[in-house]
Length: 430
Image 1 (spheres, rainbow, N blue to C red):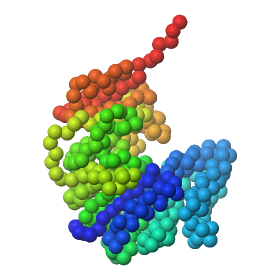
Image 2: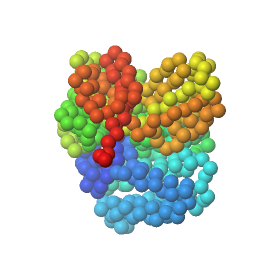
Image 3: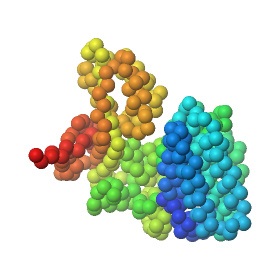
Image 4: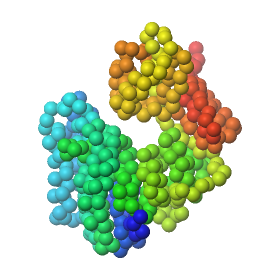
């Protein structure tokens, strides 16, 4: 383990304005003279804005140029709050933004996910260019690194799988010589590249995972995620009152929580850190001196109930068209198609004649999966659902969560309860 190197990750919320970027610079002043790799996400809601451009281009509805112009104006306004008009950062930004121009000039690509990655990835490039220039302007020497030169993925767009052997070799060859106490290294989250040099992304909110990849490959001393909350909480404060911060968390518990939908950390983040015993800190960029949450090998006893909520869920009930049993060969085929469509299964249950899965209902994945199996199977889909997972549950909490809900599926495994819930329909008065 590199006893000196730390990896910091700053997400979109910490970079969503001129003042926010200045605050990040202030946090990093305390790291001056230390070996540090910084991973940044796209600023604010940039990814959402770029997704609208992708959709408009795919539909050829004429809105893409105006949406892109609005994005450029917003980006340059942010820069003008940080730099003089003559600063070279504006040249670098134009070089990055022209990549979207090139895509929009062409007819829509037959692979929507390919176009998505080429356009949406520019958000991270823009963010890294701005933050890199600002840190240097503030007397914090910082080197810029293209993450695509390091992280190699397979050829699946929007959900690239990291090719670890090649990524490790790239990190050894490119990044390790850059690490010093004289200058930070700053790079982008979320993005990688194929063996043919096409940009891929690692999945929505994947910048945490990027930081974990760098931490693993560089044998970092620790990794820190900077959030707008004081640390890992027992529930989402936007959904629940009286949530509390967890001071300590084990890798195992963190993996369970993120797998079940806790939003504070990307699900793939923990395992690379655990494999090399690299502690993870979750801290607040609003209160940088706060203790945050420390995640490590340490075993923690007596957790309070922890609640994770996944909205926008679909429940698929799959049965054979001839009403025969759902046998082993059926299951084998279904899991193969699930993997091919990168369908994230959050819960499953099978009976003799039906196999039910609860999945994230986003993009067209559910429809594409259903179409792929419709020749052999009948599929009934319930949409607009939420999946609630409670670790270290108490019956009183479960009753409160079920209130005014219909339970479509429930499962209990040791300390964990999962429930797929639907709102009770509101009856209209006659």
